[in-house]
Image 1 (cartoon, rainbow, N blue to C red):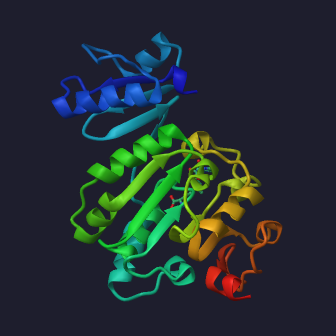
Image 2 (cartoon, protein in one colour; image 1 turned 60 degrees about the vertical axis):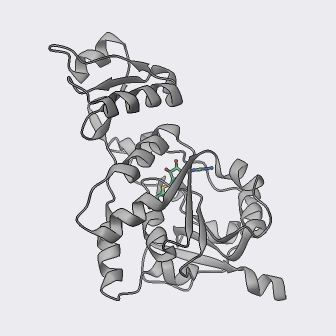
Length: 266
Ligand SMILES: C[S@@+](CC[C@H](N)C(=O)[O-])C[C@H]1O[C@@H](n2cnc3c(N)ncnc32)[C@H](O)[C@@H]1O
């Protein structure tokens, strides 16, 4: 897919935009086509027979056919606001994250959960977000670096997330035993039943393979505190992957947690 990528800039790119465009083309294997005169995204798509155009302007936008994908902190904004007023965040409670913790988010996606983790882990903590889709990882990495908000805590949390474009299994295999406090999974697999009517651009970019036993095995090896899985209650995934039955019955998605301390003492 990446081989068809065209990278373009605004008509009068700043040196920073030009440099991001060069990096995008290099890292994603795309070709740079400067926007001149009356060039439009549609014209670039038809001239180069491609569905994918990454446009580097004030905002970085990926055009997939006539759809646009750009980074946005989405639900993390609301969740951080609630946390700042003292409300509990279910993911943080379940994963038992404390300030100073190191967290591996194995399915970064748009990064909303990783931002919330980064806020909770604080400046002494560490959040590494792994995303297998190189395009999505690039969009999110740049977005996390550049997104501006009048919410200081949001910006600070975003800047602390480290993005790695890789398959989480390959990443985990390179990590020493007990090297992260929390390992987290939020896979795409659970969405497969519904919503195929409309084209979902994020889904188009995402990797939707089911989680493997090997990945959970690696997570158990590298986690000191918890391994957390977010899944559909009814999908059978918790059972298949050896997670305890979740206690929530109220929502369609929930978290199940393997507590490593308990495993070590048994
Ligand atoms: C449901 S989304 C995660 C959403 C994320 N928790 C958030 O808050 O935005 C799942 C993501 O995991 C990625 N993914 C799936 N399998 C992966 C793997 N083996 N390694 C790394 N990323 C993977 C998909 O490409 C997708 O972007």
